[in-house]
Image (cartoon, rainbow, N blue to C red; front, side, top):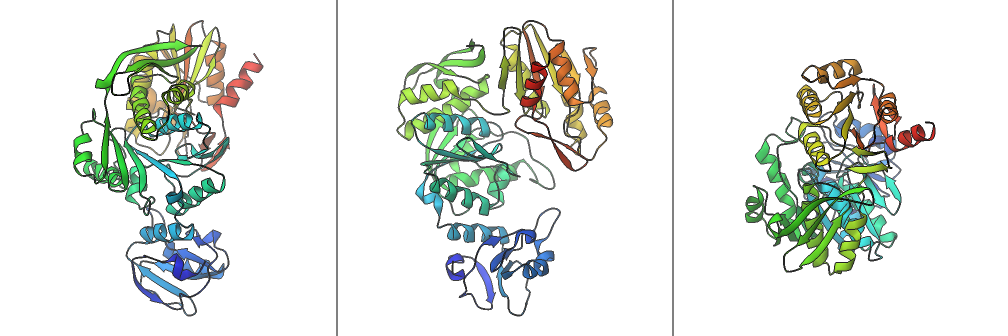
Amino acid sequence: MNLNQVIKNLKFKSILGNSNIEISDIIYDSRKVVRNSVFVCLTGANFDGNNFTEQAINNGATVIVTEKDIKIPGICIITVENSREALATMSANFFDHPARKLKTIAITGTKGKTSTSFMIKCILESTGAKVGLIGTIGYILGEKITDLNNTTPESYEVQKYLNNMIENGCKYAVLEASSLGLKNHRLDNIIFDYGIFTNFSNDHISKNEHENLQEYLESKKILFKNCKIGIINTDDNHAQEIISDSTCEIKTYSLKNIKNMKYVVKNNIMGMSFDLASNLNINNIFVSVPGEFNIYNSLASIILCENLGISTENIISGLSKVKVKGRMENIINNNKFQIIIDYAHNYVSMKSLLETVRKYNPKRIVTVFGAGGDRPKSRRYEMGQIASELSDFCIITDDNPRFEDRNSIIQDIVSKITKNNYIIISNRKEAIEYSIKNSQDGDVIILAGKGHETYQEISGVKYEFDERKIVNNILENI
């Protein structure tokens, strides 16, 4: 594409050199630069792309986009106020604004983004439509999952995957819009057809994320200035602030519209049933994932799909079949015990998980968990306390120790536990095997912390570790 087309509507301070040239791609990692490409100098907490301009040029870059005033003979230099904002504009131009050719749905909120996105995907696919999804689990198209480094990847990847959806015949695109993704311009140049707000609570406050809660909330609000219709959970304390600062048409949902909510087991699957007493008046809805919070996620999905013109039959069918990888994921439900994999890796999510499972009256809750290295130590203490308090038995083990000593992490976890209802098995595979071999009739075994992850990170190396495969191998050899 001609560079002048790529930089259309770009906010730049200056252009030095010839912009009337053909470019092959847009790159922001100097190691991936190809001949005649544009290199965009991004800066992050631990890196500065400006330090790699020489490497990028040596690898074939003919254009440098930077926030700094530099001159390099024979190279087109485009100076901008914000390189991430520039990357978003250029990427949208390069892929010819693929979002305009899809029905786009973005979901933001502290909790519920992943589950809601899977519910929507399942309902829409029940109509026979093809759906692409970008989020925590990865970029999902059909049965193929491409891992992502972030819930909302950089704008170039967003535009690339949206374009790929079109090439593969997708009608819908569902995206998880993280606060950092919105803050860092990864979703710029997209006006979403629908934006969903699930909830807001204290999270992601650190030097590399958000300065404070208000700045975190302001990042969430960005979505509702860049969508046509906003679907808002009005039971959340921050809903009115979201609504008042929005520029879109507003639809709302609330548990006030729910009747006959029940915790039920259907075909050995823990789920929820309820009636929706609104203008839709849908009765006997069953959603095949447990917990009151999944009623909220179901409501967001129902309102969205109803606005898309999806039939009641497809909505009911989709919700009854939904399965979310690593979110209350029931992988084994035999006549003796159930095994659930969940991503719970802090106090709030662990408490919610265990309280939810308890409502299905298991004989015992056996929780296998650890804590991530290079993360706040307070998380370990809190998780140990709540897991011991709400479980019948705990097996404390590894999670992702990263660059910390695994045994030190485990000692931090047990240091605040007061009940004598746990053992330590530091090897996670052995801990899982112990939980299965010592299970009792009616047990629910919870493997908490890793969820959708298929690796274990130790000393900077990611080793294959898929708990689904591990469980199946253990069962085959018992």
